[in-house]
Length: 267
Image (cartoon, rainbow, N blue to C red; front, top):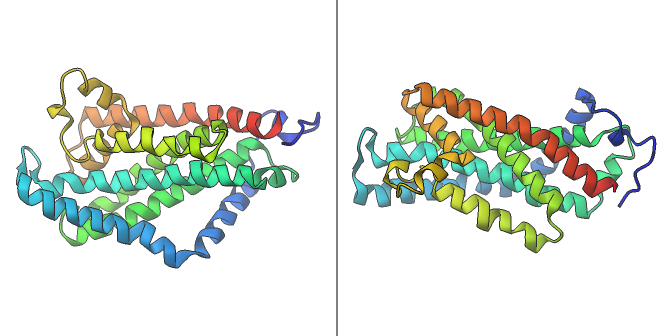
């Protein structure tokens, strides 16, 4: 680990310079571009199979969902949002942990770059991945008529919230995990339960009374609720509260991620 020097930029008051943030972000874009053929399977092929299996397979058994119509129309926005979550979480947990282990961040900090700028760049790239995923999966769903094409711009706005929230959560795990094995818990104990209990596959109202408020308190539930609202064009005051919750959580996670990553790198 690096020793915290008295003139270390990360120890100074937080400053965010666009050039520093975009430089780190562009590094990640180039790295993703080098594996674009494989990335196509991450962003489009695998989620397309999931969407087809759930919408056409389970959808035939379920039939229609009250107040939503066909099960495919109900489930498609949830899968779009959930897939974006996995991309953002992977980038800022697994990929960020590898950069910690390989001293990538320590090398970056030898330049006049702060930890806050690194965190903002990581969150920006998590948002980028979430948006790419949303375009890919959302376009596939729209091609089958499960999501209106006109809803894709609004779904992209939802993906910004997905990227900031789950990018922030991912960075917390990356900064705190002592080993890669411990880091895997973010997917087994966080991402998977959140996905299945987010309302993506069934209405939250069918859960037991004691579990329903717990599910509503989860960040992915709010984002799935927003995604389904914009996809179906049925926004109400509940969606406004969900948006406020997501924005508040995003703001709260940023300084926490900065503090924990700084401690991991500089103490």
